[in-house]
Image (spheres, rainbow, N blue to C red):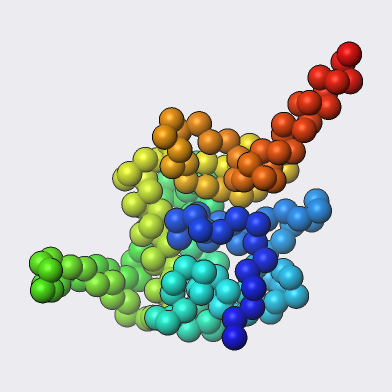
Length: 186
């Protein structure tokens, strides 16, 4: 049985969901892969694999975790500065460990990811997902505007003006803060 996912934001595209394995709680940094919510590193990995539909395809083991941490750092650097050549090289380094094989299915053309070492699979999938986000709408990859929040999201709102990871958390805190400031001025 897999443990409950303790993260405050889930369900984002795989690349951003990987970044969201680090978050702040009560002013303290948390890391799903470093003992958050009392989970071991590998148990945290199992939670993340399960949340992203990868648990049936990949093992939650130390090698997979090391490669996933490499991908998380590469994606974090690329999101922070997409023009940084070192960040691009880190993403390319992860992508070197897999490839897409075209297939023919009953429905027509298909694709299948292949890895020389399956432990690189989740890392490669996250890096490839980041490339997909860049292709679709790079300006919609956002970091939460909430003070002290480190979470990322893909803005799928119609007008592209989403600012917070969650209206219930960061959005509500921002509104409450503005309201408090207005009432204090009176």
